[in-house]
Amino acid sequence: MTPFATFCLRMGDNALILGQRTGEWCGHAPVLEEDIAFANMGLDLIGQTQQWFGMIAEELGQSPDKLAFFRGEREYLNTLLVEQPNTDFAHALMRQYLFDAWHLPMLEGLVTSSNQQIAELAAKAVKEVRYHIDRSRDLIIRLGDGSDESHRRMQDALDWLWPFTADLLARDDADAALVAEGVIPEGERIATRFAQETAETFAKATLTAPEGPRRTGGRTGNHSEHMGYLLAVMQSVPRAHPDARW
Amino acid sequence: MSPTSKTEFPLWEVFIRGQHGLAHRHVGSLHAPDAELAMKNARDVYTRRNEGVSIWVVPSAAIAASDPSEAEQNFAPSESKIYRHPTFFDIPDDIGAM
Image (tube, rainbow over all chains, first blue to last red; front, side, top):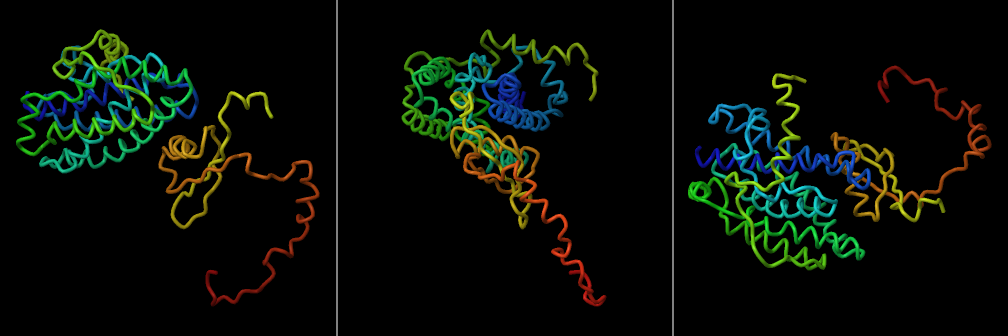
């Protein structure tokens, strides 16, 4: 696979898997307004997935639908962060916020990509993601600096999810090749923005990011134990009815 | 106070401006802890199908409403005052659309 296809697949898979996790809240969020807000975000992400997959459908010889629903677990290149289970609303919010804190500087960097298609996709997606992080950051601060219980839940979520942010920020040869061609922004630039964003927010939210081991592997197809279950749910209908149409 | 008021967020009324030049119109209500989150919720609940270009949110408690039991005395007297509509003037044809 070319570095370009690898990058687009990673971006698309991140959006797809987080969109699926976000969609799991539909009908289950704590209040109606959050339910709709989460569904909206999920749909934004699925829309982005379609565009990322559309760009590489020809190279990979597979339609966006086939890419989304008919690959095996090891062929998905999303980060470990986005596949982590919902657990409770705090985990879902924290996962969303950590992803947004990486996603926004990434898309802002891609707006000036030397690749025209990527630049156009990013220009549209960046508007959606500016709203996503506005919302997730606001709730992280309110609930982190809220009641004893909300603080405890947000800190638990951060303790669980923080180690997976290493996978968000990880870079390899495919990325280096694209940076050299001006297609994607430099990794350090995104890591710096991510560190600033999260440090400011956690200070306001009275939360502390944990020290300790960091986890990577999702970007190369080595997923956590939760991924198989997510795919089983997500793929069951398309696999049972592979030629179904709306 | 209603029995749910201790556990639910306060109610807000939402007004959306459909396009520039039109007035904000009442579209519904929602629950939120404060104005900032009411605004975000209004964006998600009421503008997701591209309904608007501007949002107002107002605490429902801030709205003084007419009493339904006084509807007759408030509104019935104007039913028979058709001369209050400006429909009795002859408009010259060459004025065109007004």
